[in-house]
Image (cartoon, rainbow, N blue to C red; front, top):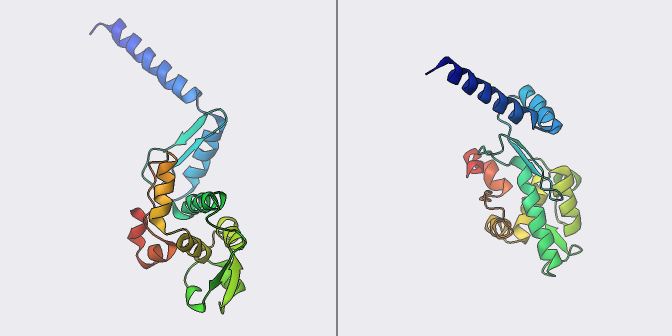
Length: 179
């Protein structure tokens, strides 16, 4: 191969690498800084629904959702509310047996003895604002379980997510979260 071809190929690759690097938004570098400080794999994919702009940091990686899975549960619940199938003011009775230990739950901390009626709107606040695992499972049961959430999410066009288990099921077997 002539030297000039190799030189031009190298320059072309450098320009492509620079332009790809230069096109990354500042948010990418903030995410990168955080990701380098944690001991684990970080994947972030963000879509601005107004202008369709994206930020992708290992966004095509297979990652467990952890408590982020509470977001699709919340929007599935709110869809049922919008359709008149669920009333946010309806109270759900929570037994002491549902106030399980060994999980994160400010709801359980407030009502350790259970046997309390809590409005669905409060359960939603506990789940979304406090990442409450018990409130999450109660809402999940109210809306028909993980399969209903997955079906709704897929129906609105988010095909890449799977919803396979509740918080209690994931606590019972750590590997379940990888489904």
